[in-house]
Amino acid sequence: MSMNDQYGASPSRLGVRPSSELATARNNLVISTLELRFTRAFPFSDPRAFSVDLGGLELVELERLPKSLRPGQWRPHSAYIGRAHASLAWGDGAASGSAETEFRELSFSQGDWSFRQNGKLSVQDVRWRGPGYKLKSYGLKLVLDPVSMRGPHTHIDSWRLRLEADQIAYAPVAERWTSDVVVAGEDARPVLSLLGVRDLPPRISNFLAMPNVRVRGRLDLSPERQDVAVERGESNTIDVRGRWIREGEQSHAALLFRAAPFSLGVEVQPGDTGVQLFASDAWLRERLERLPKSAPAHPAAGGEKTSD
Image (cartoon, rainbow, N blue to C red):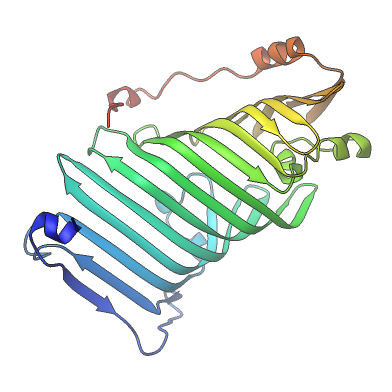
């Protein structure tokens, strides 16, 4: 049954298809296609569903956005949206929907790091019961091809990444994201740089490169603290387990790399990276215990319900 049949109405439709691209020096916005569809007689009665299709949208000078509209500590710069589709429906006391987009030249920065990438993003089975409840999604896929990044001691022109996330939850009051993830990349060099693992001897750096790496883990992200648990990572050469935590501008990590019969422990502290040859599981457990503990929950976060 289609959504239109379900709600017993034909969709109203609003379309914008300029014959020439629109661009002004004031807003630097280019729209080549924009199409909106609404069920029922929107906006004269409450909508029960809508979908949006958009193409050819160029955004520049995004750093001028008010801080309240920026994603956390990230500073966006520009993007070109080749295609985007989103749909949302209301029923049984909840909103549900999905979205997907293809983008190019998406650029942003955080601190000393800058990023630029092309890719595709798909978010499925999004559910929200309204204020006081967490926003949830049960399927996200992100493909970045290629990614370029610049940072202290890091210069990467082309890298490929694929991320799949499940059981995603966002608590609006605490601004906290949690999710199980599976990440696959060409190698681990860019990730190790982001985690603060650098200035290692060349032989050790090559050992940790991990071509065709695939990692299963858990994310817990908020503006004050980013926590990445690596439950299992494997590549053509070695496996890895451990955890990385960032609080403010300081990174902490404990990672254990194995390539039988060898093993290597890497401990990251603010301004320093330590290496332990032939590290054991006991070494990893001890270093994990040293990592900063989670801060008490946001006082208002307790009011956010965990049910769907």
